[in-house]
Image (cartoon, rainbow, N blue to C red; front, side, top):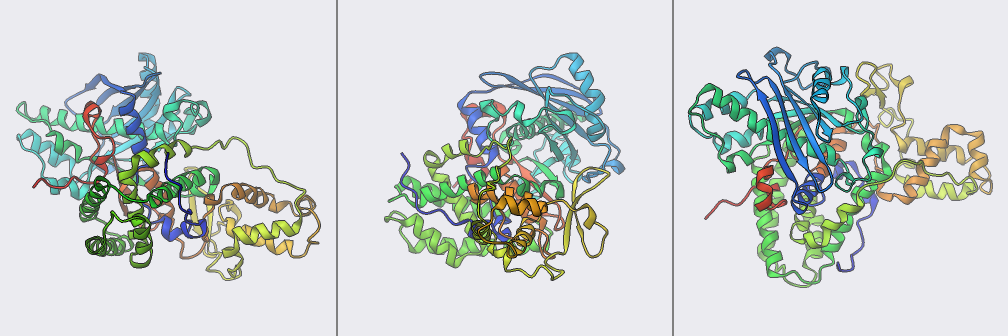
Length: 559
C-alpha cells in the first residue's frame, strides 16, 4: 500500500501557463507507460516486409503483437526532392508516410493505403487504421550518417546529440481524423486505454523503420558498410515538429487534462509522504540528478525564451547539487523538505524538474496511477438548472477569481482570437484588433467567458435559478456546462488568460508534450516547437532484457 499522501498542490498553483510550460517528462508519461506494458506483456515484434529499393523507395511492414491482437505499421518511403521538404502543415509531400493498421493488412489493404497514405490530408484511410503520419529526414544528419556507415565508421555522440534524430514527424493523426478509427471504438482495449497509446506505438515503430532505412542505404552505397552500434543506435530518437494545432487540446478536454495532472500531483504527494527513504532510493535519485545535468547539457535551443530557461535550469542543478551536499536525504520527511526548498530556491523550470526526478525511485508507488489517466468524454456535463444564482456566482468566483480580477476592456487582455483555418481545418490564433478574425472565434477563452457570465449574473436576483438565467441568457450555456465539469475536474482548467497579448502558445504545447514523454523541447517561435521522442529507448528486439524506464536520461559515463 502507498503511504498516506500529503496534500496535493492546489490547481491555482499548478495550472498556470508559466508552470505548465515548464513540465518535464516523468514515469507517468505515455511513452514510458507503453514501454512498460510492452515488456510486461512480452509483445512480439516482426518485420514481415522490407521492399525498399536502392533509391530508398518502397514499402515496409512492422508488426507488434500483444497478448490479444496485432498492430501493423505500414511504411512508405519516397524519393522527395529537397525543395519539397517542409515541416509546415501546408506541405504536400514527405520523405516517408505511415499508417498504423489494426491487425495484419492484406495485399489489398496495402494497395489501398499506398493510394491514400502518401497524400495524407488529401487522402482517406478507413476504420481499420488507427493513425496516419508522415516524417522528413533531418537534412543535417541523414547523409552524414549514411556516408559514415558506408565507410565503416560510427557517427560521433556529439554529432547525434546536436540533433537527436534522423527523421522528424510533422503529424501523427488519430482519433477519427481522415477516416481513421474513432477513439471510442478502441478505448476498451487494455493496451490502448491509456491516452495516446496508438500514437506512441506508431512513433516507436517509425523509429525502428528509420534506423533500418538508414542502414539499408549505407549498404547500398557500399557492400562493406557497417550497421550502427547498438548503443549508438539508441542515441537516435524521432523528432517531431508541432504547431498550434495541438494547443487547444488542453482547453477542450478538461476531464482528460484533469486526470493527467491529478495523477502527476498524486504521484508527487505519495513520494513527499514517504517517511524515510532507503539507501537505494536515495542513491537512485542522486544518480538521476547527475543524469538530468547531462540532459540539460545536450538540450539545445535557438529561441531566446528557451535559452533563458536552460540557463536558469543549469543554475538550478548547481544549486540542487550544493543543497544535496548539505542535507541527509535519509532523514524522515526529506522528500517533502526538498520540494519545499525547491519552491523557495529554484526557478519554476527547476521546480518541475525536481518533481519528475522525485518519481524515479518510486515506480512501485506511482506507476499504477497511469491507469487513472484516461477519461470518458462521450457525454457532456449536466447543467443543474435548479442551482441558485448566488451559488453559481460563488462557484465562478472560486474557480475563475483570477479572471474576474482582469480588466477585459483592456485590449491586451482581449488581444487574441482562436479560429480554425479554412484551408487546413487547423486551429490558429490571430490578433483580434489587427486582423478580421473576431467573427470566427472559437470558444477557447474560458476565463473571459466566465467573467462575462459573472457580470450578467450581477443583475439577477440571487435567489433565482440558473435555469431561468440561461433561458434569458443562452450565450452562457457553454460556460455553465464547463463550470459543472470543472467542479468535478479541478485540474482541468488553466488558471490564466488564453487570449492575452503576452500568452505563449508554446506553454500549452510543452505541457501536453511532457505527458507524451518528449524531451529537448526547442521552440522555433512562440507558436511551434521541435522535440525528440524515444531518444535512448531500447528497440523492440532489446525490450526483453532492457529497463523500460531508465532510458529517459542519459546514462552516467563509465568510471
